[in-house]
Length: 382
Image 1 (tube, rainbow, N blue to C red):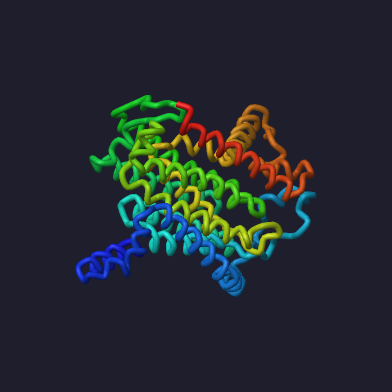
Image 2: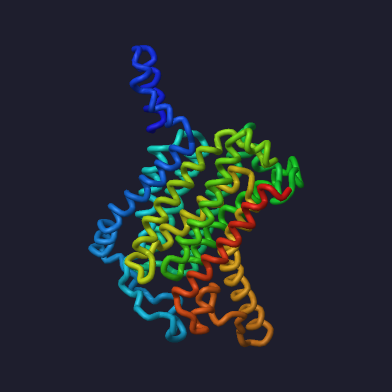
């Protein structure tokens, strides 16, 4: 919006003879400037709206009064404070500030529109799930099936949309791997659509599963978003992409503005979500943020880089899959279900072992930073 306004004013100034007066508006042409503006706008909006949103959620009694899965089966030594009653659905704050900032500072194109619409859809899905949990109106099994159906439908739509558009078809049909210069598979329409769907759905659910400790999911999301801030900027810049031998995607640079908005909104939310949390993001935030990361990875032709950068999310999701699979298998074979971990996702396993919540979060941050460094190294090691 601001970009279009600046172009309009510059064109008007040129015809009216006021070029020098409005020359400063040329900075809006630079993605770096608009990314900084988006991050700062989202941060200050979050800090300003945060107390208001928290008070609003409390007034509506949208607090986590249902039994937390982490508390089932006994007390956790790492839980020094009860989390019951803390407002959830704080993802509304993240999504709202991200949308406003991105719409203000980004140059609108199909990538930005596709990402913003997906963000809103997944946030609405998460909001429904959070509301159903709070009011105890949903059956857990049916809720999981509904979430998966909406996620699969959205991800499949994105895959088919990219495939149907000639300019974006290679994003789906050409399969690239980190650390390799050339695609390992080309013309793979079916494989590409399936991969696109799995990346978006998997990323959305992986971030959702990681959201269990104060500041854990949003902190790791900030680190991964920083990686994609760099990756999207490079993918959208023809010279940098050619020099680093990564796929160039025209228009993808605007996703750097979106990433910056995510970082600013995430930092603002972390202000209120750090231990002891004043608000939780809930599925409203985690499903939306995870899905947005997956979509951006697809749009810049780097889905497997997300697997590396989001290694913490991957491990958290795998711990749940392993726990459920092993429990069902052993119960089927022996009649008694056994567990791989004391509790899943993995962060709850460490809680059960007696580690403090802040210790777990900080150590997961460190691991996420290491994963981010490896992901960024794929830009040069080819």
